[in-house]
Length: 103
Image (tube, rainbow, N blue to C red; front, side, top):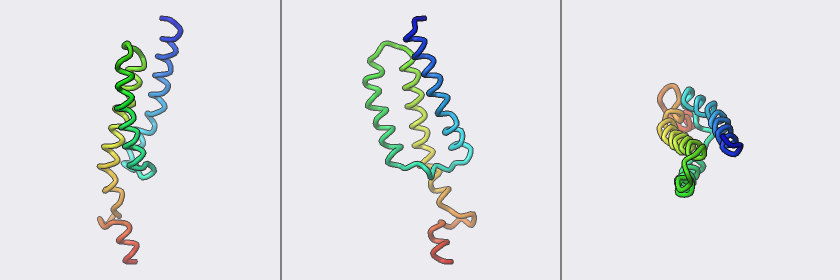
């Protein structure tokens, strides 16, 4: 294995590992309130556009890393859309904003 390929493989592993705590916390808590829909959407659009470039390259670590980014950002978007309604409700089932207005 040559040095650039080794560096690409190692950086792919490190970048993927750096994303795992974020994904784990989002899956565990279902709280994505610190993320914005516009940021997650732009990330997904950017990843799709960047795919045109990445997948034109020869197969290598960049394919693995980019595929991971595609899947992780798509998963975050799905979770954001699914869980934002859950976290906008109080334990009584009413929206927090409505509950605070009535207090």
